[in-house]
Image 1 (cartoon, one colour):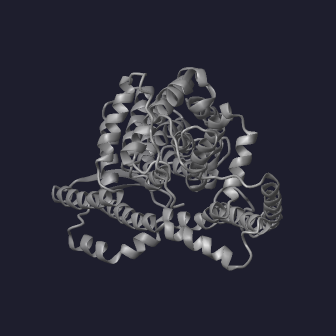
Image 2 (cartoon, one colour):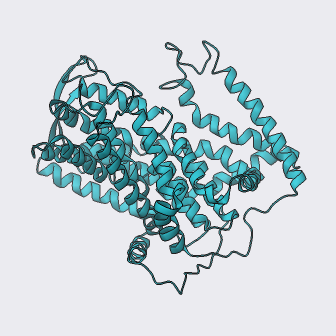
Length: 533
């Protein structure tokens, strides 16, 4: 994974640059002049320390309604900005470093998943699968397939970032298209499409519970069902694919073929990152990999499907939701990559002893050393930012300002969408923003006759598209690393400029879709509309 390619970008000289192209080039140049991501987050930590002291000194605070978990009743909570330069703040910075790092979810997900994924790449299974994939999937459909799988990958939490995005780049590389364009398509599906799916995901369960807590403050008998946004999500999922690639003539021509790929230019390389094995040997290896996968699948089914199985919820017996099975997905993904890779390596003669299994995994972790250091810095920044309450105070005061404007239902929902999109730059993650803002917006919109489910739909519109352009997203630096494999000059600005067209088109299109649901009173889910019945 440490191999780099020196590529010569050949910009289409005969074709003049468009205004959009010039704008993106400017963004890339400015963005790439910023320091290494580790230094960026160190600067942000210093900024948070200073701002927390300033706002704490002037008594900045916010009062909002929350649901008391013990009494199950609504109560008003006042939260003030905490200074990191106070005695308590200094103690926190000095005593919590290890705890901040160990509790940082992205660290564990990355390390566990990369045991399997990294080993699969080292042993050659990823390369073999790419060869088969490019033979099976039509070249014209490659992007849409990547985006669609990316959207579905949110079922497996963050696994799409670690598996599909580098795979997307590799597939494009193998079919003769710019690999970073493949990375862009996969990243758009995994991250910009994270909020919607045709399958109910763990995020759906968390958002629904938060929404129910908010609506119970005004109507204790009203309950939001988990499938309340299913129709909107299905339409949105198809929309992600359409926007990214399927309608090549219309939207995809604008985003992928008219903006992203022409701007990246053609590329050349002196070596093949994914050399093909002999077809007969490779097919033999893949057959053994399939045997390993089927055996592992049988074991997983045995501990999941029967009544009372260990991976079912102990009380409800459910498989999907807050269950041991869903909590095991990263481990399962690691095993799904590792076990077939061992079978593949044995069949190909690449694994002859246990040392041949351990050595590639050690190499994978050695290559991740820079990323681990970056995650250490990011974990401290997020912990410091959360300690100060700056995000919560900002969000609540912004929401109070919008509430004071006394707007109509649609205008208020659109302001809610814009507020979420803006906050997503600094408050990354679907759950925290929703937990902060729903107690404010849900009761307000409920009084205007707007169903709580409409608030959830509006939140889905705003939350995901911004993920691909905010450097504060925990996996953003990892995306830069993936891209640098094909172009070592890639920086933060390169990825922001690459993904900005996806963000703009997805955001505008989803807003138009939401307005259509609102104006034509289309159902958001089974028996659920925009308006209260």
